[in-house]
Length: 384
Length: 136
Figure 1 (cartoon, chains in turn cyan, yellow):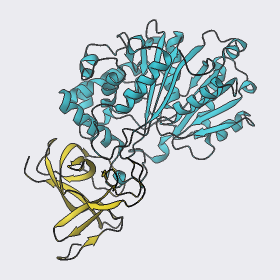
Figure 2: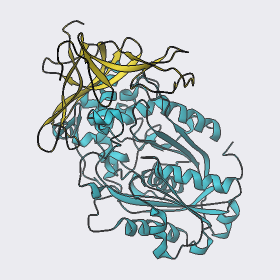
Figure 3: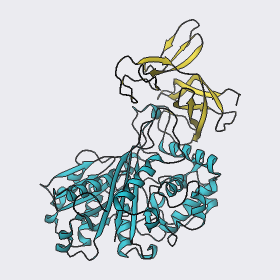
Figure 4: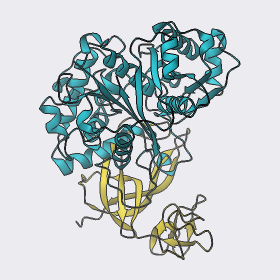
């Protein structure tokens, strides 16, 4: 099983290490990522037929602003906004355009520069009634966390252990923003943001860009791609609107997206060797272990502590350091996850390589909007 | 603000104060009876778009979850507590909570009106808030 239509492969990837680039422009970061992807496999610019750019805060025509100075003009350029799922949604649009036969090759990239806001929490729409009451993203996840802790007995120290694992993996990843190993004590002692979250339990303000070149099997041969990576599933869902009771200790949206992805790819959670999931805040990783079936419901903490999600565990989760440590610039995050998985599936991930990885999964959730679990959710299954 | 014997309704229309105190204004669908907050002219549940009624909602509810926010956009004074309160008519409200008595999931909370934001000149903006009733 695979996506509807023709098989689509990722042939080349590239990204800018996530960091705070106060003295570089958004367009400059984007060009570096696109050039890195084209260089990854020596793909001629002219062979790219369409481009899709995901960005949360990049503004009008962000894709064209990046591509202009690379001389990649004239082709259809589609700009995509879907909050934290922007980049992954752009990738899905690129894959779909190829699968359904509109083009043979496409560039998908994501880009954002959050340092433009100075710092603090990402801006949300003030027309949202909950935002006008003082809702911020860390608070939304903190309330999930408190409920999850009440229902499962998880503690703040357990949340800290998610961060300790994340920093440990990021220490091995040259693309990561925070690479210094940490301890439970240091995580718990960092500045309080939204009880029970301390600063280290929140993904940091970051700038960055990431790119992937997609194409048909024939394009892979034409470009001489040694190890094309099959996109076996590409799923986009949105949150269901509930004006009343909603279970916030479990991700209905994540679980639904996972089920659809497994069905499309014809694999199950037991087949996933490595995954990059949307750990925007420490609680999210525990909830997504369960939503994706890497462990049973309510067993997230036990799975973490058993080492099941470590690089050499049964399902390695966020070997890059995830959003918590690789960083989370919003737009490029979903594409960066795909870069990371492609490197693992090719066996090129260096010190953080998940041994023998053959099947990988990426997941981006997106956005705070009153009454919805989250605005958007994207899942990709990649097979070597 | 509230003057005895009169009804004060906010410009946004999300709450009002009458002789019995403040209440949130939701909508009720005349077809499927579903209630919602904030009120709307289209029933998201059954699709009905006519005759949506404005109804006052229960003044008390149960705390589903909460957090104390230490980092916030301009206009809010940190730290402040926000939480989700489930009203008996299956309506969930996100609101600031007065929490000086300590809070636990499942606490019964009651509606009141108080400052939730401030203007650049320091003057406060009132809105709907919740606090503990003391019952559980």
